[in-house]
Length: 186
Image (cartoon, rainbow, N blue to C red; front, side):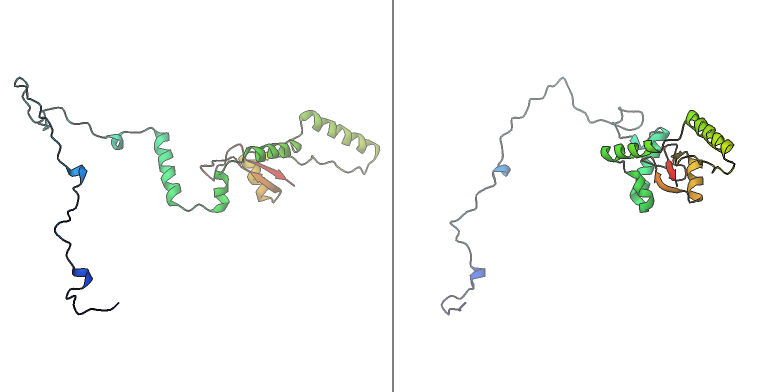
């Protein structure tokens, strides 16, 4: 960039010639609006919304409604879950298993279904017959089965007998996991 001596003002301070005008904004162009003729029979007066005067304007009163207990609880739960950091060990039970995983789980649990009363009686009779023939017959144990219910599951976990644990989804109180909880003892 070279500075010339014949141009006294720099390029940034040059003025635009007066012949060029900027076009007017079409949105700001004034439109001719016809005024409606007022009917002399109907007189316009402002509303007076003081106490005991005109009807009060409609207000949003949802904050002051006494909501049912279940609505309040679910709203409070949502706020708590947003504010608190849930440990991963507990948070894993908030997600539902997809259809394929659920089908595999039910197939797996069906193999370890608790034995029926008839099967148990048959096993006991076979053990008694074996014991009658041979004095040193080994005692037969019940086959591995699914344990369900809070008390049974907690007992199996405390005794370190459970190697698989499944809980229902959407557990709200981790202390009481519900009847759907099941464990598979060793």
